[in-house]
Length: 296
Image (cartoon, rainbow, N blue to C red; front, side, top):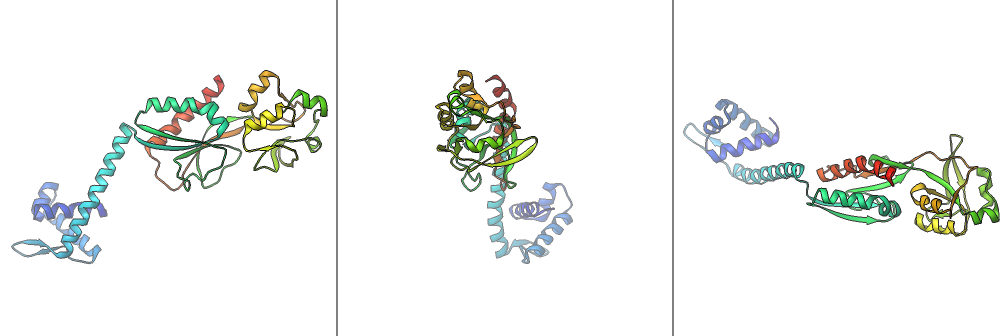
């Protein structure tokens, strides 16, 4: 019998006023109840119930323990009831960190579908390319696009995207098209604000390449506009590049190796219980996002 069970049995004995009555309600022998209360008293190091041949009564320690036990058991019962209710009818707030461009393009519609499916779940959406600490910054989950994630994160892959080397036809006409990775050192390369190097794959090997260029930005759409305006070469995800490719304002650099897919992940706090509403959203994204990306 664990601590909560012994505590519950003690409360029952105290409320019914006798070991026999408690044993009768539990459907066990009186000796079983007596032994469990004795074990609880030994564990606590105090006598909770004073016994005599004619009566039993709570000691001062027993009265205090009874008061605290009722509060604790009530909290446990309410918590269990709320968890059961949440599984039947998910409720509560979901604070979510989303990458700006991908979030607005591909997650907003899906999140509205999720909100319609679960009307008692409230969504607090933060669109930003700033990398958050999910637990420390108070998020329930974060969607991240990355080749690698911190080992401390609990993650679930929900999709993937492709990185493309692109430039505008006007840029290629003026400066030529790089024939190899080494040629990039002679070109303006547009970069994210937190980058000084590009990490990519060539002939199956991971390569880190120091890049230079006049334009930096903290958002992929801003870099796409700059690249389409002829300001340099970009390494960008296909979900940003595709509209420019359709319009012909950007083209894929055909002499550079295609890059392996980059994962789209949901990251969760690693040190906390996962509420049902969070689990449902993760499953929803894992199921719906791949098909949504194919249709788009």
